[in-house]
Length: 183
Image 1 (cartoon, one colour):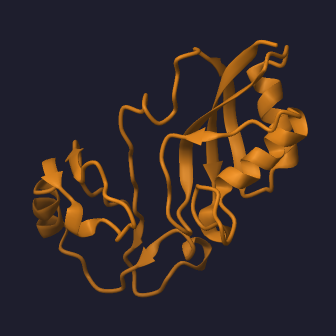
Image 2 (cartoon, rainbow, N blue to C red; image 1 turned 135 degrees about the vertical axis):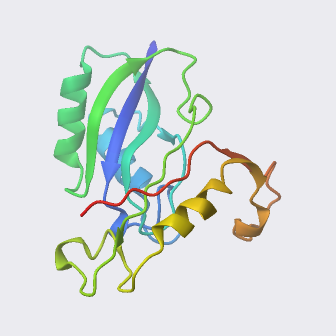
């Protein structure tokens, strides 16, 4: 039986999860999506993500792929079917067939991280789970000057978690680091 590769773009609220990956203790987002895939494909496809996230981290566009026996389901129907089996805090935004050589992790061209700061004396209760509350005045000019120092190629070993294995490289290239103030 021939197989087909599919690419998914997934959004999730990570508040209830111990990150992206399947975990020995706790639940990862990947596990929930794999359970939904198993409802549609008896072969129980393994999902491969473009990256990992830590406990409690959200994603707006996590790319992942899986292989399954060829089927006549198009991307729109696949996304609808998966979302039926997923909890409300995980959603497949899009699904499409992918080339045989596509790999979500190794074909990723970059990652974008956004951090939200609520800079006001009182925290907005509607965003308390997605923003950091800083009640004191911020020096945006100094922050922008410091942010520019991160742009370029740097070794981030001192920021890496202690793992029980040696990472191939802790050198990363930051292409942009800036602040945007609204309101």
